[in-house]
Image: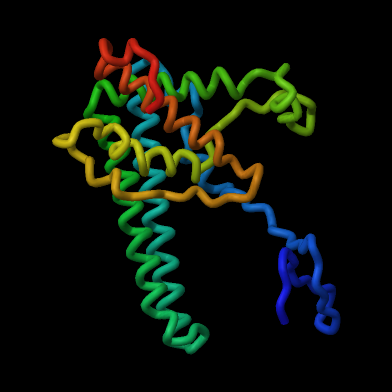
Length: 231
């Protein structure tokens, strides 16, 4: 069959047809509810109180540990499926590659947390970025936000979803390596794709990184950054 600007769709196992507007329903991706307890609030992540902020970083370390536990669990499940024949042997290399990538990523998340803990400029930029996101996302009168309400009608304050915070921690060290000799510069060779359907929260994750990098550049290079430019 040959067609231009059309797709194929079906209603059951017996009816297949061509259409200009094929449809496919993608189930909503929701965060694991158990992970929420490891995600600090924006108030904690932007707190000027040293103890509160330090405790929020400890939560992030636990968050990365939980991700590591999940990876090991998935690795065990995959091993069992290959041994029992539930997965075909030709998928083995791909499975190993995915697990290896996940292990690299959890280490990058840990490096991100450590980078915040040891670099005062990064810590300051991280706090300000969280404060900016808190300010922009907790405006009950904004038409795009006012629908964020609990069953009792009260306004639900914005809180990072696990993947959003992980995405920021993954990338912040590489993005903050502004000079060739900076530690973490090799991270700029990595392109991370935040894959979520529309409405999943990708934009906020991008905004978080953009805000963090903007504040960091302004702090590290105060004179050059006085001149507006596109980064």
